[in-house]
Length: 185
Image (cartoon, rainbow, N blue to C red):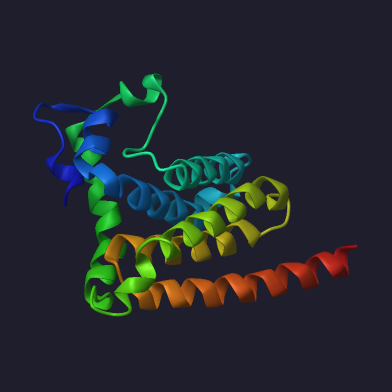
Protein backbone atom coordinates (compact mmCIF):
# COMPACT_ATOMS: atom_id res chain seq x y z
CA UNK A 1 0.00 0.00 0.00
CA UNK A 2 2.87 2.36 0.79
CA UNK A 3 4.48 1.72 -2.58
CA UNK A 4 1.40 2.86 -4.50
CA UNK A 5 1.54 6.21 -2.71
CA UNK A 6 5.05 7.02 -3.94
CA UNK A 7 5.44 10.00 -6.27
CA UNK A 8 2.70 12.07 -7.86
CA UNK A 9 3.00 11.87 -11.63
CA UNK A 10 2.48 9.23 -14.32
CA UNK A 11 6.01 7.93 -13.65
CA UNK A 12 7.76 7.30 -10.35
CA UNK A 13 11.47 7.32 -9.54
CA UNK A 14 12.87 4.35 -7.65
CA UNK A 15 14.16 6.96 -5.15
CA UNK A 16 10.56 8.00 -4.40
CA UNK A 17 9.58 4.40 -3.67
CA UNK A 18 12.61 3.92 -1.40
CA UNK A 19 11.92 7.19 0.40
CA UNK A 20 8.27 6.27 0.88
CA UNK A 21 9.31 3.03 2.58
CA UNK A 22 11.89 4.84 4.75
CA UNK A 23 13.71 2.72 7.36
CA UNK A 24 11.35 -0.11 6.41
CA UNK A 25 12.97 -0.25 2.98
CA UNK A 26 15.55 -2.71 4.35
CA UNK A 27 13.04 -5.33 5.49
CA UNK A 28 10.72 -4.68 2.53
CA UNK A 29 13.60 -4.94 0.07
CA UNK A 30 14.77 -8.15 1.68
CA UNK A 31 11.27 -9.64 1.55
CA UNK A 32 10.58 -8.60 -2.05
CA UNK A 33 13.86 -9.96 -3.44
CA UNK A 34 13.46 -13.20 -1.46
CA UNK A 35 9.93 -13.66 -2.80
CA UNK A 36 11.24 -13.20 -6.35
CA UNK A 37 13.82 -15.93 -5.71
CA UNK A 38 11.02 -18.34 -4.79
CA UNK A 39 9.32 -17.77 -8.16
CA UNK A 40 10.26 -19.44 -11.47
CA UNK A 41 12.66 -16.51 -12.03
CA UNK A 42 15.19 -18.52 -10.01
CA UNK A 43 15.54 -20.80 -13.04
CA UNK A 44 16.87 -17.92 -15.15
CA UNK A 45 20.67 -18.25 -15.30
CA UNK A 46 22.32 -15.54 -13.23
CA UNK A 47 19.14 -14.35 -11.53
CA UNK A 48 19.84 -16.02 -8.19
CA UNK A 49 23.41 -14.73 -8.22
CA UNK A 50 22.15 -11.18 -8.72
CA UNK A 51 19.39 -11.64 -6.13
CA UNK A 52 21.84 -13.08 -3.61
CA UNK A 53 24.21 -10.15 -4.04
CA UNK A 54 21.33 -7.67 -3.66
CA UNK A 55 20.20 -9.46 -0.49
CA UNK A 56 23.75 -9.32 0.89
CA UNK A 57 24.00 -5.60 0.00
CA UNK A 58 20.72 -4.80 1.79
CA UNK A 59 21.79 -6.76 4.88
CA UNK A 60 25.27 -5.25 5.08
CA UNK A 61 23.81 -1.74 4.97
CA UNK A 62 21.40 -2.48 7.81
CA UNK A 63 24.14 -4.07 9.93
CA UNK A 64 26.39 -1.03 9.35
CA UNK A 65 23.59 1.23 10.62
CA UNK A 66 22.56 3.12 7.49
CA UNK A 67 19.36 5.13 7.97
CA UNK A 68 18.09 4.49 4.43
CA UNK A 69 18.82 1.88 1.83
CA UNK A 70 21.66 2.95 -0.46
CA UNK A 71 21.25 2.18 -4.12
CA UNK A 72 23.41 3.40 -7.01
CA UNK A 73 22.26 6.69 -8.54
CA UNK A 74 21.51 5.07 -11.90
CA UNK A 75 18.97 2.85 -10.14
CA UNK A 76 17.54 5.62 -7.92
CA UNK A 77 16.97 7.86 -10.97
CA UNK A 78 15.28 5.10 -12.94
CA UNK A 79 11.65 5.89 -13.63
CA UNK A 80 8.83 3.37 -13.56
CA UNK A 81 5.41 3.98 -15.03
CA UNK A 82 2.68 4.25 -12.43
CA UNK A 83 0.84 1.41 -14.20
CA UNK A 84 3.87 -0.89 -13.86
CA UNK A 85 4.34 0.11 -10.22
CA UNK A 86 0.67 -0.59 -9.49
CA UNK A 87 0.96 -3.92 -11.31
CA UNK A 88 3.98 -4.91 -9.19
CA UNK A 89 2.14 -3.81 -6.04
CA UNK A 90 -0.86 -5.90 -7.08
CA UNK A 91 1.38 -8.95 -7.60
CA UNK A 92 2.88 -8.42 -4.14
CA UNK A 93 -0.56 -7.93 -2.58
CA UNK A 94 -1.16 -11.68 -2.39
CA UNK A 95 1.80 -12.43 -0.07
CA UNK A 96 1.16 -9.16 1.79
CA UNK A 97 -2.47 -10.15 2.35
CA UNK A 98 -1.28 -13.52 3.68
CA UNK A 99 1.05 -11.71 6.10
CA UNK A 100 -1.73 -9.34 7.16
CA UNK A 101 -3.97 -12.31 7.99
CA UNK A 102 -1.27 -14.42 9.63
CA UNK A 103 1.03 -12.02 11.45
CA UNK A 104 0.51 -10.37 14.79
CA UNK A 105 2.74 -7.54 15.94
CA UNK A 106 2.01 -8.60 19.53
CA UNK A 107 3.71 -12.01 19.29
CA UNK A 108 7.25 -12.19 20.60
CA UNK A 109 7.85 -8.65 19.31
CA UNK A 110 11.15 -8.38 21.23
CA UNK A 111 12.58 -10.99 18.84
CA UNK A 112 12.19 -8.53 15.96
CA UNK A 113 14.13 -5.68 17.57
CA UNK A 114 17.86 -5.03 17.87
CA UNK A 115 20.07 -7.03 18.53
CA UNK A 116 17.95 -9.90 17.18
CA UNK A 117 17.16 -8.06 13.94
CA UNK A 118 20.90 -7.69 13.35
CA UNK A 119 21.33 -11.44 13.75
CA UNK A 120 18.60 -12.11 11.16
CA UNK A 121 20.15 -9.66 8.71
CA UNK A 122 23.51 -11.36 9.32
CA UNK A 123 22.05 -14.80 8.61
CA UNK A 124 20.29 -13.49 5.49
CA UNK A 125 23.56 -11.92 4.34
CA UNK A 126 25.27 -15.31 4.63
CA UNK A 127 22.43 -16.98 2.72
CA UNK A 128 22.55 -14.29 0.04
CA UNK A 129 26.28 -14.81 -0.39
CA UNK A 130 25.70 -18.57 -0.68
CA UNK A 131 23.24 -18.15 -3.57
CA UNK A 132 25.87 -17.64 -6.29
CA UNK A 133 27.72 -20.73 -5.07
CA UNK A 134 24.59 -22.90 -5.03
CA UNK A 135 23.02 -21.62 -8.24
CA UNK A 136 24.07 -24.75 -10.14
CA UNK A 137 22.17 -27.03 -7.72
CA UNK A 138 18.45 -26.96 -8.62
CA UNK A 139 15.95 -25.70 -6.04
CA UNK A 140 18.58 -24.65 -3.46
CA UNK A 141 18.19 -20.94 -4.21
CA UNK A 142 14.42 -21.21 -3.75
CA UNK A 143 14.96 -22.89 -0.37
CA UNK A 144 17.32 -20.10 0.64
CA UNK A 145 14.70 -17.62 -0.58
CA UNK A 146 12.04 -19.18 1.67
CA UNK A 147 14.27 -18.77 4.73
CA UNK A 148 15.15 -15.18 3.82
CA UNK A 149 11.49 -14.37 3.08
CA UNK A 150 10.51 -15.75 6.49
CA UNK A 151 13.02 -13.49 8.22
CA UNK A 152 11.88 -10.60 6.01
CA UNK A 153 8.27 -11.27 7.01
CA UNK A 154 9.28 -11.24 10.69
CA UNK A 155 11.00 -7.88 10.24
CA UNK A 156 8.24 -6.29 8.15
CA UNK A 157 5.38 -7.43 10.41
CA UNK A 158 7.27 -7.27 13.73
CA UNK A 159 6.01 -10.80 14.47
CA UNK A 160 8.59 -12.74 16.45
CA UNK A 161 6.91 -16.05 15.64
CA UNK A 162 8.05 -15.62 12.03
CA UNK A 163 11.57 -15.04 13.37
CA UNK A 164 11.39 -18.34 15.29
CA UNK A 165 10.18 -20.09 12.13
CA UNK A 166 13.03 -18.47 10.21
CA UNK A 167 15.57 -19.77 12.71
CA UNK A 168 14.06 -23.26 12.51
CA UNK A 169 14.17 -23.17 8.72
CA UNK A 170 17.74 -21.88 8.80
CA UNK A 171 18.86 -24.81 10.98
CA UNK A 172 16.94 -27.34 8.85
CA UNK A 173 18.38 -25.84 5.66
CA UNK A 174 21.88 -25.94 7.10
CA UNK A 175 21.49 -29.63 7.88
CA UNK A 176 20.05 -30.38 4.44
CA UNK A 177 22.79 -28.46 2.58
CA UNK A 178 25.47 -30.16 4.69
CA UNK A 179 24.03 -33.58 3.84
CA UNK A 180 23.77 -32.67 0.16
CA UNK A 181 27.35 -31.45 0.01
CA UNK A 182 28.52 -34.61 1.77
CA UNK A 183 26.72 -36.74 -0.82
CA UNK A 184 28.15 -34.77 -3.75
CA UNK A 185 31.69 -34.77 -2.41
